[in-house]
Image (cartoon, rainbow, N blue to C red; front, side):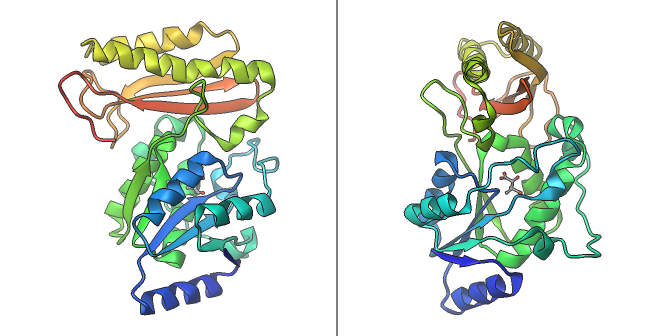
Length: 288
Ligand code: PAF
């Protein structure tokens, strides 16, 4: 894998690829790679000639008091995993490279960017939208792959691609899970054993409401209430939100429709985890 850490070199590498008519696929990450990230790479690999992965722990998307300073960083390990998975170029800019002195431009996504994750983490989606737009400008990919685990982030990115007329195809890859159901996340390493055990409640509760929907329940308020009840059974889980929303706007819905999302966020000690499930009422095929 070739490592690049300046914008000038990254743009030059993309120009070269373009001159050879190569399709560029892009996987933006903050490093601390796990199987979920590698699944994104494999998806990109199947569709592109050149796969670029960025590793950039983006200060703009962390709030005051969040885990920016202690976010896991291990570039050597990540580079090995990226190479094995088939990444061609690893883009690893410094914070100064992305936000030089005097940096002043930010992208705000109204509505969807203010709800749920946006409400609990003010400024988070402004940071995400800004860095993703910048990375798209630098890498100029034909396609980019994001994880379904961060479903609201995915919706925010689809919104900016649409609103700002970006020529990038945004693809989602399914959440990869541990054997007991816990969604893979770089933040899982923060969990001591008892909290790690307790964190199973998120996926277990989502499976339970999926079951209820499969049995024919379409009242979204009842599904959301059931989700909250399930999570309340775990004393180590401090619920932030549990809702059933439309996948594009992230507004709560009254009726479960194909593609409706059950979303949940809870804290286990100091660690905040999120998860979601795509709901499919019987007889309907939801979109992933
Ligand atoms: O999902 C992430 O890892 C980050 O939010 C992203 C998309 C790389 C932007 O910093």
